[in-house]
Image (cartoon, rainbow, N blue to C red):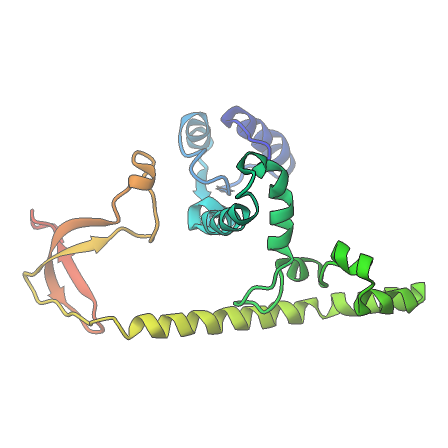
Length: 236
């Protein structure tokens, strides 16, 4: 993806959004905290707009990119042991293998979840696998009908993959919850409070941002494990 400067961002908003649709109240940006200050901040304040950051679409913000890169790095290291200098030439093949390999959590491949059917590997064409042989026997109309049927089933595949992911997460959560030790607090106890939302990063500190803040003192114990806190200066 091509990088974009703050000035380019402002020009885009003026031409493509304000001139066509009017002045928005909120701008949602999926480029993380790149546009959290500077010219963009002055621009939004001048026009009375609020800028927010869409974390689900910013892979670096929720760790998806790091997780994928870790898997790709591990797989890449297996094929470049003899020639580490040629890792760039093997990267595309490793990424292709990553996209066409089944995941335990979803029960299918990322390629199939995107296009509705699995990719045909070059080896399958060379060896004339049963899957490829059956496709050669189809007429153009039969092949088209079969392809459309698979596309119709894509939504169902998405739902099945979602069910598998949720079941896998529930299984992992159950295993972790067995190790959790509940702890209750009483009034006047000193506690730390998690920085919300979880994973939020202060632009000043980046990845070194603290995950806890405080200490605070428990001011009042409410039902359901809820507490009202106050600072050491007495502010509730």
